[in-house]
Image (cartoon, rainbow, N blue to C red; front, top):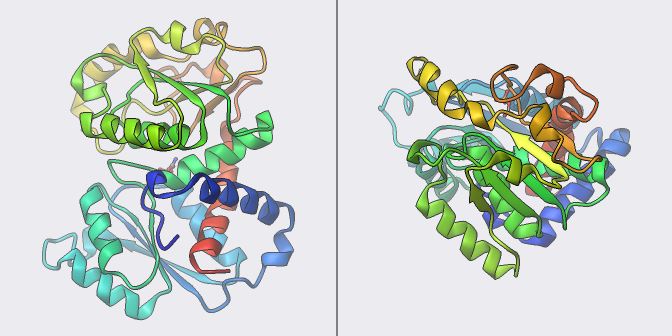
Length: 310
Ligand code: CP
């Protein structure tokens, strides 16, 4: 495992090992306290972040390394004055690992191809692998297993978190049902659907299925997952129309009544209470959103240690 760009690049063994290692690191924090001494992580941000930025930065601090925050808007690359190839080659001279949150997936692939150090995808338009690995750590803790579960995703499915969840379920053998509007802007891209079908076939699992019926998706689910209807890339002027289109896919008491009694509610955050989820559900007893956010820290450590050969 040289980089972490997409969940599709991992084997089921890699995926399970990262979860197992994160549990070990979480339980025995002091054992790892100097693991990344004199190592430097550079984090490139083109989009906002609370959880990803802070969890990676704290992870590096707790492992005795350094993290540098670098904002793309002030960079020669962000200003269109330098190629990603040259950024990759330059940063490889100073740092030990690069993490990037940039919209273009093809640009992060260029970064990984041209860097001589590991590259981590902190979110592009096509995936958010660190988020989903942390989420499966939470699923393992809360439900005791990471395969054979029924997971429902409701809402905007043309979304990086949904795509990584689709990949993870195809890789690990969980049944994923997505409920989303049928309009193209909310529906997974054809190329991602093809990729998921191929991945599921390779691992002898079933690909995600898609419905417009949220109650059907939620029926007997172990996990209900949703994400913001106003992802970072969406312009504010589209808000009213999107809220109207997505309203039938809100996670609320009626949706939750269809799930198993033991079902958990997940959201990668940031959340908009009253839109994709009601306050009652996100702040209710089945919600795991804050343990889910906390686990970002432990999985980031597992990812960093694995990529740096520790
Ligand atoms: N879930 C997530 O990636 O949060 P941030 O955008 O705050 O990093």
